[in-house]
Image (spheres, helix red, strand yellow):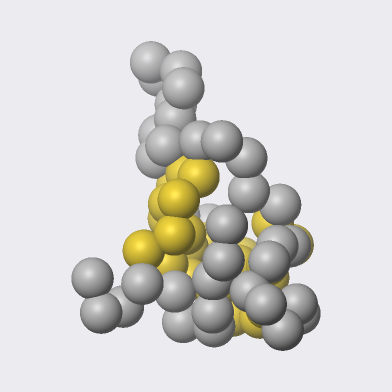
Length: 63
């Protein structure tokens, strides 16, 4: 997975009652765009260090 600052990360829920999470990547420390990413989550208005799993994908602003 590769991302740049400003990309959106989407985490799909694998549980029926859980919700989908979306956030904006605010920092990428690896020059190649590899995780982890500092993400600002829209649902909680907080930031956290994020290590994407198989249920996550990146949406680039030009898509």
